[in-house]
Amino acid sequence: MRSIHVTRSIPAPPEAIFDLLTDHANYDRFRGIDGSELLRDGDPSPNGVGAVRRIRARPFRFDEEVTAYERPTRLDYLIVNLNVPFEHHGGSIHLSPDGDRTQVDWRSSYTVPTPLVGGLEEIVWKPVLTRGFRRVLEDVERMTRPAA
Image (cartoon, rainbow, N blue to C red; front, side, top):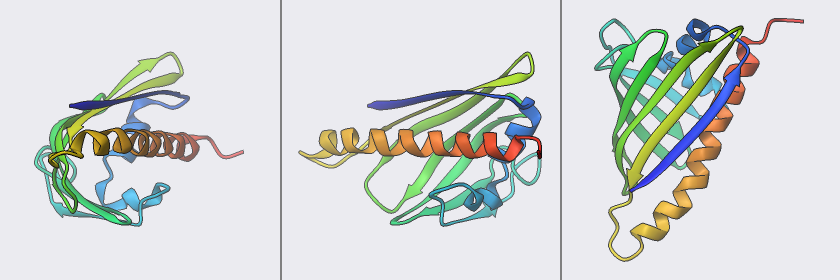
């Protein structure tokens, strides 16, 4: 099993960051995301536990289900469908206030169930996913920056 761990300190309140990260229907505002939609509302509606979002980042299409939703400090999710061999073991985003900043801690783990080459594919996925998480958090920071 491989794990991704990305952290970032963002000069914004946790509520603003959490709301951007859980606005499932609008994930296409982030770099590298070609489209997004909310397939099923969760509880609390629309983005809470049980919500399913579909994200397209060419050539990939994947559906994620929200498994924990604790505004504004925690979002857990599980990729339940991906158009390539990939087993997601869960992801979690934790937000912790730190003065006038918020520390974001994003973790995800996965395996690639392809015989013989799965381990190599897992190694290839790691920098791709890490870069994607970093870009999303960079975009969140840009979006929460006060207008000059």
